[in-house]
Structure formats: structure tokens, C-alpha cells
Image (cartoon, rainbow, N blue to C red):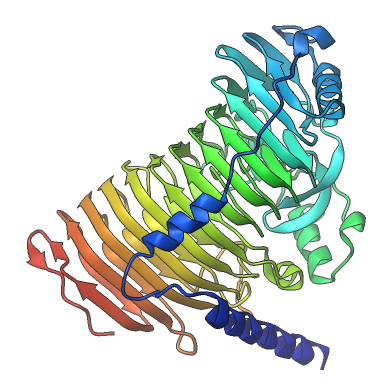
Length: 480
């Protein structure tokens, strides 16, 4: 009976969300790329402003030798900066070793050219905070750079943020991988897959145990995020280079008005997504380079029961003028997206690598549920990808059986002006459900030089193909 009530409430919530969407969202999802709406959203996302005050970490005892732990120096400089109304905390030329850095209101952590922040590999240097792991909230090791419920914060400058993730540090905690890459893990060593780690966290979430009672950290093996503004507003991450992340790299969590501009990410560890906006609104990702071990951009909205309880839709995500190199996908939604995702824009991007799997990817299943409403891609230049230009599945499988009773909804996918030298296996791979067809896919002005097969499509309703070609052969709509 309790399960039945839960399912009824879930479907009621989906109905309400869709009803509100129909009333409040004026985008015509089918017939054109909504450039004016995208510009309007971008114009509303304004960079935070800071006072001219400067606080050099050298004046607080930091040592530029790459060996002396400078956690307290960062802390003191940030506290004084915020207390005095904000400004820049300066990290000068040199290598600075530190544990977790916690940003406060009105603080811009600024790395000068030649500066490198090297993050400790000792888990004890990361205090327990409220954070998230794969779409589930918990008390765990602090992200390397963290802000909780702060306003007007930034990380800027031409320096390097080095998480020191490698096959000796952090990455082996992933455990055995389906890809066969061990990342330093050996059978018998502890990992996140042990029953008291991720499986235990999933169980606590399903039972709705309060977050403050989901305590992990020491003795557990759930890796910290790299940069996580949690519940923040007006966030800027600009120009820095980020390397060797333990886990997800930039993770705006429950945040609003976030700009990621000119960032260069080089990190090929497990779950090294480049940027994961989750339960977040108005996020602009521009002029950046993603060379990652997992998805370049992975848009999230909570996992399973947790996402449905929290119920914050991730919406208004703009990815423009970016370059994607290695990764499982260029712009990806899911798989943790149970609260729903709306209005994702990919514009003027370049994607090319033999190790890039897909250009646009959506992934969910009947355990995740959730919805995706509105994915718009235009002016995308593709050198080569392994699998598909557009890849959608409602049968995504990870960590065993992913079947449930929460039927996902996916609709309104629009791709225009896409050129590809090699699209891999398919132009479109789309696998819907009999009781929940993928609705309204439009391809316009698609030109592909090489692909193994045009389509692999199942349970798709209202597919439109306009002025699109493969090797100068007109792309014909398949029989579904």
C-alpha cells in the first residue's frame, strides 16, 4: 500500500511539473532553435563583483614550496577578506600545498600566472561537510574547494588547481570498472563498491534517513568532488586550469547564476566529469576546454527516491563556444536526473576525439524516472566520435538491475547545423519505452561524411528530419 501511494504521488508530481511547464515556458520546442530565449537567460546571469581589496596568502604564512601544508593560511586570508566586505585572496607564483579550501561570501580566490594549488592526498585534510555523491546527499569528505550557502564567490586567474588524483591517490577507491581500467585498484582493496560505502548510501537514501545521519568520511571510500558550490548564488569560475581530480570536477549543487568561463580541464580518472550542474538554475558554461575521463558536461538532478523528494528541476543550462576532447559524452543529461531537467542549450561547440563517445546524450531508466524537456543544439562541429551524434536511452544500466516503476519522460530534442566527419555508429540512437515514447526529435541541416548506420530507433514519436545528408545522400526518416 505504501509503495502504491508513493507511485501515485510521483506521477501526480510529474503531472504538476508538466502542467506548470506548459503554462510558464513559452519556447516552441519543435520548430526552431530558441536563440532569443537563450540570450535572455544568458543576459540574466551576471558576474559577481568584488571590492579591490587584496589578501595575499603569503602574508598569512603560506609557503610556496609545494611541501608545507598551508590550509590555515588560506583559511585566515579568506576569513579576513570576507569579514572586511570581500575582495581577492591572492595566490602568487609558486606551488602551495593545502587541504580543503572553504570560500566565504564576496571572496574571489585568484591564482596569478604561475600559481599552482596542490591539494593534499591525505583524507584527514578534508573535514566532514554536507555534500553529495552520485546524486545522493551525505556527510562526507569536503570537496577540495567548497562553499556552502554563500553568495558572490569566485575562483579566477591563470593558475593551476591540481587535485593529485592518480592510480595511487583517490582513483583506486573507484574499485573495479566495467571498462576494465583498474585505476590502481587491486582485488581485495577497499572501494566505493563495498557494501558499507555506496550501496549503504543508496540504502539510506531509499529509506529517507536524514542527511545528517548519513555519515561517511573516515573509514569509507567515497571520493570528494573537486569544486562544489552548494546552495550558492552568483558564482564565477574563470580561466583556471584544473587537473587530476579525485571525482566530479565542477559540481554546482542547488546553486543559481553560475558562470564557468575559459576553464581548461585535463583529468582522465574515473567519474571525472568536467561539469555537473545539479538541482541548479541559470548556469553558463562558455569558452572552456574539456578533456576528461567521463562526460565533459553531465547535467544532473538527483538520484532515484532522493531526487524525487528534493524535487528541484535543473534548468536553463547554456554550453557555448566550448571544445570537447576525450569523454563519454560532450553534453550529457543523466543518469542521475530524477527531479527533471529542462532547457539545455549547446551552441557553437567543437567536439573531436577518437576517445569521445557521443555528442549529445540522454540517459535514464525506470528506476531513475524523471523527465527531460527541451535540449537544443546548434552550430556543432564534430571531427569524430565513437558512437553517435545523438544518443538517448531509457534503459540505462549501471550497478546492476535498474528496473523500477517510475516511468521517465523525454521530449523536445532539437539539433540544427551539425557537421561531422565521422559520426561513429549512428546519426541517432534512440531507445524509448512502449509506454513512454521519446517525443519530438528534430534534425535540421545535419551533414555527416561518415557513419556506419543512419539510425537505431525504438519507440520514438514525431521524428522530423529537414535538409540533412550523409555523404551527400539525403537522410531519410526511418520507419519506427
